[in-house]
Structure formats: structure tokens, C-alpha cells
Picture 1 (cartoon, one colour):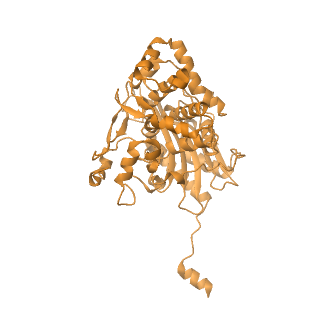
Picture 2 (cartoon, one colour):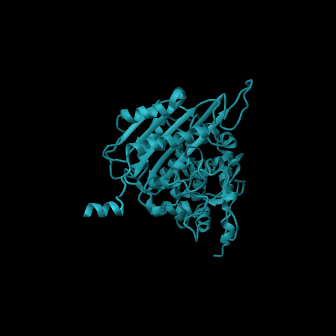
Picture 3 (cartoon, one colour):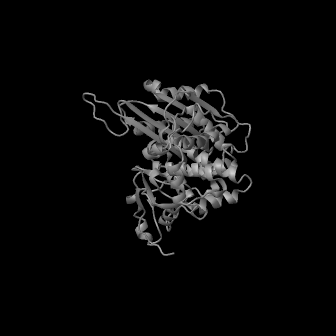
Length: 433
């Protein structure tokens, strides 16, 4: 392996719109090549300069925080935390659904929620249900053989097909010898393994990658032990099978895992593909989410109850930020914290005198959704908490609003757990006299 490391250190210039990721030491297990590129970019220094301290955890440092507390459940609302949350939300309260769960002190967890049952299209947050569906399908195929699940993810080549049409989200491409990571939309004919498509779905929030995984789920459900099948056989199946039957297979593959894992399908579902062509080939239904049910997803994952402990941990790793931070996760106050993150947005505009439509500032709808777990581990006591925010605040930059909310909630959690500072040497000497 020969790599021009000085050129790799120019990587930040190639990063455009990432969102989450997988630990940087994960390449040997997954074959996700961007992880190796980023890891090599940091050789000779503490970390790549485009990543924060909180993005450098190795795989073995990521754990399910509630796995040893099987009886854990979300407690009743805490008056102090609830009051501080209401102050943060302010006058735009009717446009929010928010849930905050702090388990920094596992003996005394704190919970606060505002409109937790308020429904909103999840946008790209719905991709966490694609992850759930895939890990459930793997467990169904190999219930007692995790190594076989890993082999299927690593060894199965996936070729991007017409299901990707058309997505502008850019994903990272890199091969040995390249001086920088290239970021571009997935094109028909691009080939990568299932692990990489999972990473593209979580890290770059690629609609093309998510829709490709959904089509592969349908193939796995139909062909069973014959999966994977050739692109030609897959295309023939999608063209010859009645749409009604394709819809039935698809909805069962996506919705059954939600119900089987104890989540409420009426409050959390991804009903349709993420690309227009995908929706044309396989019609679906509507999608919805609530802050309260997304928090239930988080809790089940942290307890190891999304499918099984291995699946829960792999989903959490896929949500671990190892790329440029955006939206809620972008505030510098979180730089030293590990952040597990998925966000999504939908915005639309209508004619309005004196108003100029801009990204994330819709005046007809302005959905911004964030699902976040924050772990501040280099602190005593450590902070571990989760936040779900669904907002539809019109005419405001929702990306900036969520970022500011992330800062304020973090300071609230800090105030609930004052840091213990070690005594200085001088103080130690005085006390010893």
C-alpha cells in the first residue's frame, strides 16, 4: 500500500455535505473505504484536521449505554428539566415536538418532552428504519450466526440501478493511490458492498443509497437463500412483477421490523422510497414520526433491543459522526463529545411579498428533524443523553435554530451534573500538612 499522505491532508477541500459515519478503524470489518482514507489522513498527527476530538473513538470504545439495565424505561417528566426545555423552545412552541432523555446518572435518569406525539414527516431521519429493516432481515436469515451476517454485508456487491434516479446527495469515493477523497452523487453502475451502501445512507444521507438498500431488501425478501442475485435477474424481477405485489413485499420488509421491535407503526414508519424513480417502480405509503417514538428507538438501541445486541451496536456505530458536523451537531460546544446523529429536512415555499425563499427557510413548510445522542466521556461525571427535535418553524433558518438548540440543551445537561475538578498540587500539599 502506497499513499501520498501530504495530499490526503487536503481532504477538507473535498468534503461537502456529510452527516454521520462509522468509527475510523472500521475498514477491515466493513470494507467502507472512506474510513481508511480518513484514518490515513490523520497519520502522524493526533487526528485529521477536518474531524473533531469527539469523532476519534475507536470501535471498541462504542458501547450500548443501557445494555446492562434491561429494566430501564423512560421515566416521568422531570420538573426542572421540563422547565428549562420550555424556556429554550420559547414562543415557537406549537411548531415543535421535542424529547430529551438524560441518563448520565443511570440511577436517576431525567426526561422532558414537549408535544412528544406531534406527527411530522421524518425526512431523512426515516433512514434509521432502513438500517433497522436490514439488520432484522440479516438476523432472520442467520439467527444464530453473526459471522454469516457480517460476510453477507462485506461480500455482497451492490450495483446502483435506476432506483437511484435522481439524487444530488454526494458520497465519498476513494481508491488506493488517490490523493484526495472525491465526493459526487452515486451514478448508475457504481458498485460497492452492502456495508458501504449502509454507510452512504447514514453518513452522507444519500437518497440513492437508501433507495438502493430498499430495493435490495425486496430482493432478499423474495429470493431468500438465492440472494444476492445478478443485476440482470433483479431488473427482470422488478419489471415483470405486478406493482401491487412489489408494494406488498416492500411494506412487509420495512414495516414488520418496526412492529416486531416494539415500536408503534402509527407513530414511526418510512412508507416510501427516497427517490422519485423508486416510488414509481414500487409505490408505497406515507411516512410519519414523533419525537416520543424516535426516543423509544434510541432507548431500544441503547438497551440492545433493536433486533439483538449485535445489531443494536452496529446501528449505533453507523450513526456515529466521523465526518463534518452539520445542523444540531455542528455547534462547537459538542466538539469534544461523541455524537450519534441523523437529521432530515423538508422545506417548501409559496409566493409572499417581501419574502425570499432560501434553503431551510420555507414559508409553506420548514421541517427540520434531528435525532441525537451525545456522550461527553472526557468529563467527571460523564454526560450521556439523547435529544429528538422535530420542528416546523416557518421563515427561520432551521439548521441554525437546531444548532443553537443543541448548544443550549448541552449547557442545561451540564448544569444538572456539575463537573468534579481534581484538586491542584498546591491544595493537595496544603491539606497534607
